[in-house]
Image (cartoon, rainbow, N blue to C red):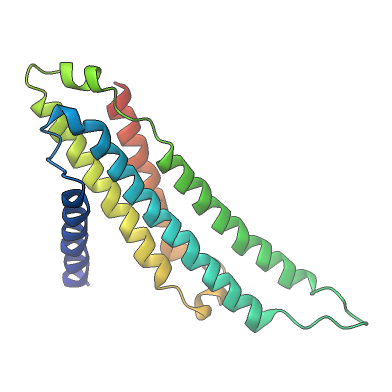
Length: 183
C-alpha cells in the first residue's frame, strides 16, 4: 500500500510540475508572476475537487439506474428509503461543490505584503510553495479516491467514508493556506 501511495505522490508532483511549468511557474521566485502562479494552483486544486464532484455524480447516476423503480400508477414515487439515500448521496455531492467553490474563491496573497515580509522574499514564498503543493496533492488524492468509488460502495452505511479523510485534509490545507496568506 505504501508503494502505491508513493507512486501516486510522485505522479502528483510530476502533474503539478507539468501544470505549473506550462504557465511558467518559477517557484514564486519571480515577484511579477506571484498572482498568476497562485491562480494556477487554485485552479488546479479546484479542478481536482470538481473532478471528485463529477465522479460522485456519475456514481449517483449509476445508483439511480440500479435502484430507482419505474413509476407506476400504484406507486408514482420511489419508496422513502430510496429517496432518503438519494438525498444523502446528493448532499455529499453538494459538499464537494462547496469545497470547490471555497478553493476557487480562496484569497490571493497580497503581493506587497507577502514579498515585504522578508528582505528577499524567498523564505515566505518557499513556505507558500510548500503549502500550495500540499493543497494540490490532497486535492488530487480526493479526485483519485472519488474516481475509484464503485456501485458496491453505495451499499455501505457511509458510501463516502473513503473520501471523508481526503476531504478533511483538503479543507485543512485550504485553512492553512488562508492563515499563511492572511498573517
